[in-house]
Amino acid sequence: MPNPLNLNALRVFDMAARLGSFQQAADALHISQGAVSQRIKALEEVLGLRLFERAARGVTLTPSGAAYHAEIAEALARIETATRHLMQQDRPITFRVGPSFATRWLMPRLARFRAAHPDLSVTTDVQEAVLSQPLGRHELAVLPRDLVPQTPALDTRELARFELLAVCHPDLPRPSGALELKAILTLPLLQDSKERWARLIRARGLTATPGYLNFDRSALALDAARNGHGVAIAPRHLVETALASGELIALWRDPTPPEETLHLCWARAHGEERGLRRALDWVLAEFGLPPA
Image 1 (cartoon, helix red, strand yellow):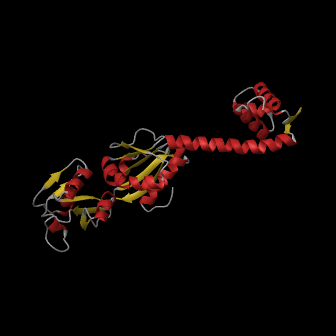
Image 2 (cartoon, one colour; image 1 turned 90 degrees about the horizontal axis):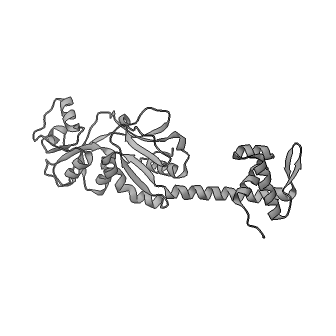
Image 3 (cartoon, helix red, strand yellow; image 1 turned 90 degrees about the vertical axis):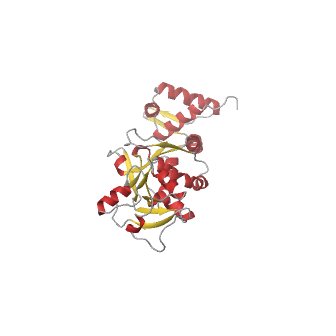
């Protein structure tokens, strides 16, 4: 071949062949009709054959042009797909999550995520206030309902309700057998800044004999429980991994129907991005839910 093929010329040829008009191809590509004509002519000269029959009412593909377009259209589609996939692979999926969710839910599951999606990388962005910045093309958030703004720009799915469990180290000294709440309140109690123990006790008109050890985050209270310092109270989704491994045991479940909920959210405009969609579906599957 005396001259190399120009990729832009092939794109122009593809658009003109699809639309059957040099003018419409120029409008779609935001260039002049003259530029379209010049690039098609240059491509025909390189190939040594006519791709279009020109007429006053427009253009039509020659038999050679039609056969060539079938191949070129498929090749351009493959290039576009490969480029999109490569760009998605190079950009990590950002999880905007609370610090305790990152520590107690996401981190123990990252190996599973990597095994399921080895071509996707992950980064985390700690979110402790109401979601105020728009979610980007490769971002999702997992947050309590009260941190998710009501806006049509977001799609959301409820992941779980905050079913509260009282948990401790298996060797924590305690009365034998199943424990009622009053018996648990005689043990050292660990709570985070939400003060769930204190709120629970006030609501039931009870008292806690030893008092509380207070932490600013659920993850720290749960770490204290894992180290045998007392009984923490936390949502089930934050303790499932530790319960399954035997690091913690559950002493009691709050029978009160939970009001707090956990939500997965993403930008509606980017919901069809392939990498983001795979990450969303993975989170949903980890909570036993169908794909988004």
